Image (cartoon, rainbow over the protein chains, first blue to last red):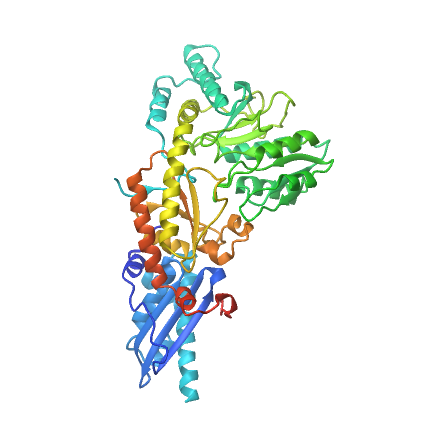
Length: 127
Length: 405
């Protein structure tokens, strides 16, 4: 199973890898997966006026998982919350040329996006 | 130093050029069928086979007549287990083996059990992957026809107490099969001293060609009989029909001869390189765990779990070094290594494991390069890891509620 060029690129040059400061305003955090499964993704979005102005990720997982979450942060930046909700795992599969055995990595990335959005909504509703 | 570097010698090994050289005449010049008794082509092939049989038998202290050629260790395992079961079915159909055996053994006994042809006792191993001889003794019943325990494990390199198990098997009158694929040619193997009745091994793990293996079948004390699984012309004294692969066998023989001559010095050299690799990596990085026995292991084997980092991404980061991992992502079935699980290594650490397999053609320069790369990639991936971040923040990962999908 040779890795696709795009997966390798994201792995070698991950986009937006890191974390926002703990007390930073307007941040939604989604943490999905489990260590026993070999896949954990943490995806964070920074929102201003219902638009995602910045995103960050950290991932424990294979190259395809890292690429999926890195790509997700790339796509999230500049989208509105509504647009972000529409990102599908199949888009990620297509963009990265993921083989069937790696499709679940894209599903996890989509879950992470939705979890981050849900977390943001929870926090902003609470205010 | 050429890239990529091959450090996966437990999966296979590069052929020794000396082995290749001895094989070449048997492809286009001395290409006869060893079973052709009536002409010079056949006689030349037969002579080459005889020589190879002696070379192979010498490495394990057996008699040349006790070597049966097969297509590889997998076939040898199948032949030993199914062959004994069929032949000794009057006595019983109970088999004892261990959870860390190679799939060639585990799958074979599982299939037999599913077909109702055998009952199987799967022994557990200790935290370092060793089978306890007393567990073997306690599992034996009067219906037991075979014990099958491997010499050394392909993933973690731990070497089992074969001699003690052989003694118990002899005491109890049960045949003892040993899958010695990873050990033959690397550590001393003596079928007499170890009390082994059947033994599987193959050429491509010891710098020989792929596609050829052997099953040692004891002829004396006791005389072991097995039912053939490949029927046909009655080759190999009726135990395995099929035209002998002369060039491959010649290579196998030569590979064994070289191992016999070079094993002592080679194992010292490999142990030193492996130990250097181990202490450099584990000294530079925190939260690294050795899998398998610390000292009683194959000279070239190293298996380390790197907490908070997943195995396949590690391999990807070290793309110019050939290694393997116990991570689920690297297996065809998406299951993490069952060997590591059997040690009680948590699935998380199983996903984070890397197996290094040093061999005859690895150099110190390659080890230096590997040390540097491992430290670099693990560090980079830990920066990228949410688990590492949480651990550094003092979160006890065992208490977290994960949202697995």
